[in-house]
Image (spheres, helix red, strand yellow):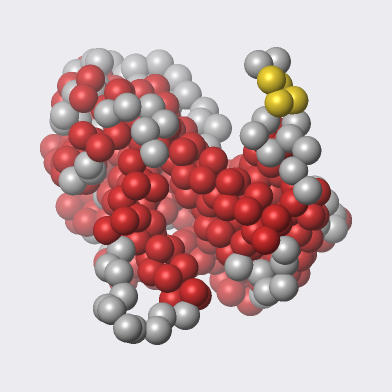
Length: 370
């Protein structure tokens, strides 16, 4: 692929296989370059201290894009191979995301607690001087450090496994020749546009299912109030406190699930648009908003779990409850930001392409950071 648009004659003869092979070759090459760096980074750092750096970030980026391409344009590949490749890439993606996820969650929760218990320009935080704040901070730090250490050990073991070596071999083959079907010999626009459009149709359908009317105000706390919908126990029924907590967790998880699903659909639409050579700035923004939503929701779960640690003081549990509520309000704020932006976006793939499709297939998209 070149950095300049193809001529009309060249674009008219570009096949879907040409485009997909070019993208897969680039991403598989990035994967193979980043893999030894990522393995070295993981092996050289203690799991509880450092955030994975350039090699791991580049490896994650390549894994996401190859997986997204195989999902959206999977109909042009040998089906068994595509499914197996997606399964292995998903395994590696989840594995690599473990440790940095705990690092970000620790920074988010400890930062929120420090803000709530400290002094801001507008006055002291609501937990300033609270006796439970130092103990709550120490508890969160200890639990997250332990989780990061365990994740680090798991990642280190798996990055030396035969499974990873097999995936690397699979990526090496992609650099040479992807197992494309005969349909990939058709014109790029004819074969790939309908598949890319399906990613946008799925995104639009997923967004339509979101309760955007409930996210119409920033920091509305609507998610917290809806916990009142958790069924109350029958009169005379003895329900352990832990049962009520589990019910509340389940209600929040069910409330968050469609938003997490839309985040995945946004990513797939982004990657489809990259293959088509179109700009994706708006989708990048939505991906960032829903990423903050995911991290705030995960952090709230961590705070709630810590608050149920046996034998902690009521003061410590109260502080952790406040941190949980703070993160749920961040969830609501992210939903509000998404709702403000989404209705302004075009509904289908064709309106995202600023140039005629046949003229955009020869362009290399600008490098992405996620």
